[in-house]
Amino acid sequence: MIDPSRQRRIVGQALFVALFLAILFWRLLPLAPGRIGWPGPDLALCLALVWVLRRPEQVPVLTIAVLFLIEDILLMRPMGLGAAMAVIGTEAARKREQRWRELPFMVEWLRVAMLLALMMVANRILLAMFFLPLPPLGQVILQSLATIAAYPLVAALAGRVLGLPRGRAERDTRYR
Image (cartoon, rainbow, N blue to C red; front, side):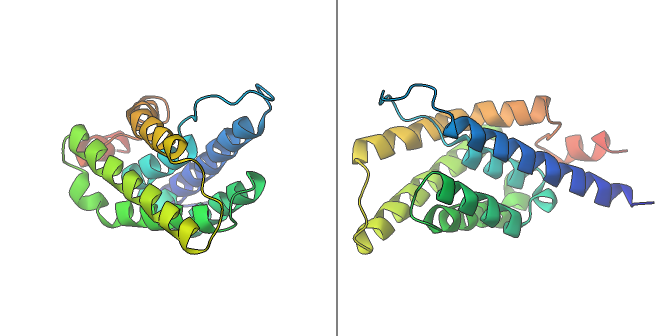
């Protein structure tokens, strides 16, 4: 029989992968072909950050790297750049997870917003440094703002629907 904590970790990782792939599938659907609209939030990155800050043991770095590499390939972005940015960002959040856990949500949101902004700037610098085509700055800023605005919604859904509470007290009492 499998250890209950290991089973929770495996089930959590499988759920994360399934949700990530569902978001990726949704992004690949041709919902409005030929129409260029406002850039939407990067829900996959929001999900990864929420999961890393709530259950860091369920989302290993290799899983994040492989999933974001698949996303880079399927969305025809520079291969590995988005995956590298996601790994660096989630690992920076994972490193500070212990300190962020008991802080109010607004502080967490502000720190995630700063992390997302730094990831956007680093991505843009690397694209320019290697003479790759740069997306319009306005669209990049709008997508970053949409991602920052979507983070509380993803965090609330993760807390309520998926059972990923914020604080240590909530987490410990849930699994007794």
